[in-house]
Image (cartoon, rainbow, N blue to C red; front, side, top):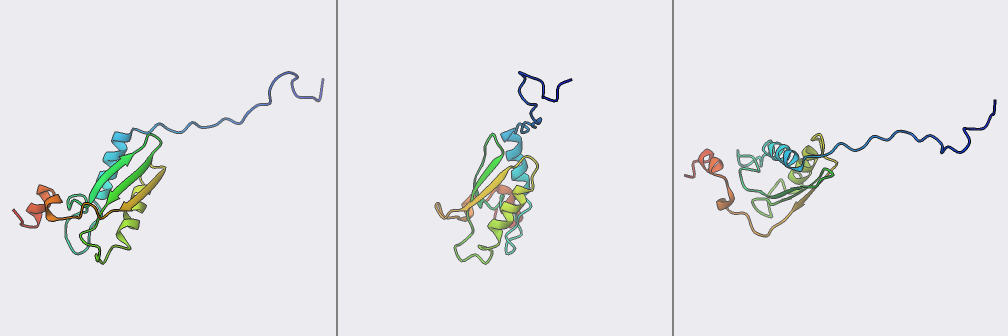
Length: 124
C-alpha cells in the first residue's frame, strides 16, 4: 500500500454551504414590520406610519438599505434613532447587512403620514 494520496485525483475539498437564497420581497416586508416597532418618543406613532421612511431596498444577497428622515434636523433622537433602526434590521433572519441613511430632502411634513397615523393623532 502506498503512503501517497490517491494519485491523479485532486485533494478533497471542504464542503461549502451555499448561501441561502433571499426573497427580497419577503425580506422587505419583514423589514417594514420591524420598522413599525421603532418610535419617535415624542410622537406615539411608529416611524413607518409617520412617513419617516422614504425607501427600503433589499438586494438579492440580503443587504438592506433604508433612507429615512426625522421630523426635524433638531430632533432629540437624531443620534440614537438611526442606529436603533439599523440594529433592529440587522437582527432579521436573512439580512446580511443593513445601512441606514438619514436624508433631509424632501423635508418631512405631516402629509407624509399614513391615514392610520393621522387617525391615531386625531388629525383627520
